[in-house]
Length: 126
Image (cartoon, rainbow, N blue to C red; front, side, top):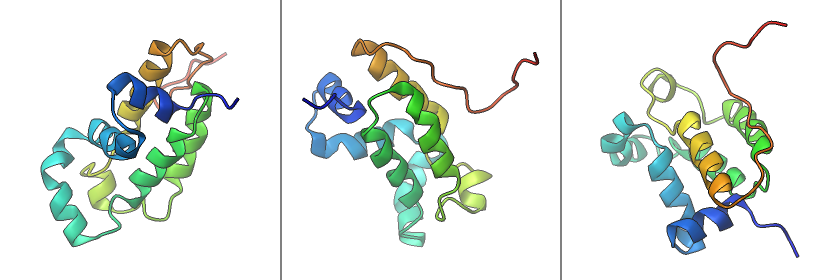
């Protein structure tokens, strides 16, 4: 039997079908300032949220919290993850929000916390 994934746990906890996973996680992970502009941004550039959706799809398959950092690194290198609208004005999903959602979902499901590295901030010197 295959281990359950983040998408499985998320959909069970939110009582939604797996088909609604991507849109639900997108809405919960989006920077709040981007919410009113999502329709306009897609009209302006249909690929504007491609990197975001690709990250959400990749995170869906996680079975361990620690692998989240790898997916975020791929997100940062994604070819559609460029531009002033996305980074300066934060018209995209928040990896911090998404990390919190992944962590909370796994913890509520009883998956042992195996460490989820912080993606920013200062690191203690040794």
